Length: 239
Length: 202
Image (tube, rainbow over all chains, first blue to last red; front, side, top):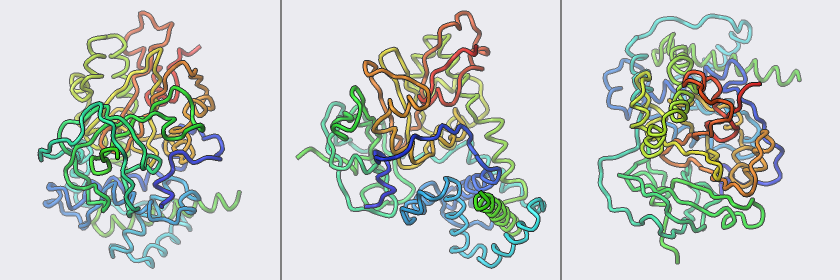
């Protein structure tokens, strides 16, 4: 198992922080902006083909999360949210050959000597136009492909228990549990890439409701329901 | 303490180094990151969600449409272009009532309805919140200052596929006769994720 897939339900934790800031350090907004730019310039977007960026990779939320799910699980909890982004994204640019570790280290040393050194200026304006257009249009997983949903509202379903993969869309605590279909979403939905455990191709998605006690037994609270949207590939008929 | 400071300064230098190199190599421009940040400061943020909730509070027909077909109801209002854009492609609202309290969590990551709420606050991204909210929501909410009795049903929504949820909180007493604009000023991002109630400032 991968601990990152099983975060929901972990016991023995401290009270959670009610920190309302989006960025707790000023530098964090820079890595957020870089990630959005990469998503807006990803090579799977049709509009990007005519944009003069030197970025030529496929980059989505799925890729960012695959990196986070691939970390040593104990390290995953050592680093703050955007620290993981910085590690994953800078690692991607080095591994993909866009920058070398040496360039990055040298430049980091220069900024350590003077953090206020201005950024280089310039660049093709159409790069930014595409990124802003991506933000306004999005990248919907809804597909034109039709499919007959296997389940209907009110059906009891069992959540499958496929072996762990690099990136998973199924919360671990649901595996093998039974729930009831509360809504069948119209149409079909793909994922950015096949996850290898049954998700990727266009398929129906269901909103499935679980009684909290059916999942956690005595270690939950009364009168509590859990609603989760689940790809059809993760569901099967009860035995 | 010194170690913490060093860790932040190092990250600050490293991210600036990365951004500089990406600009020099023609991947992004010198303005890209600032433009992205500005988009979430000016166009897409919790101020949009607050206007939607305020409208639903004063217009019961709008509220009904919002709950039945969230994107269409939002499209009736005048917002900057992009309310169905990134992380808003499939949004849905759920309503708190005297009998039901909704709480949104993303146990595996941090999915959040950007066009109506902007970017997720740290509490929402915190693995501790993600681990606990799904199993002991009332206990977590109590720590956040919100008491939800066991006679009220709690619905926890774990965002794990296409839908980005937000909560239509209950309108607080003492706001009778307020305009939509006045109401919008007291609606917080936390209340639109079910982590707080809307309160009238003393």
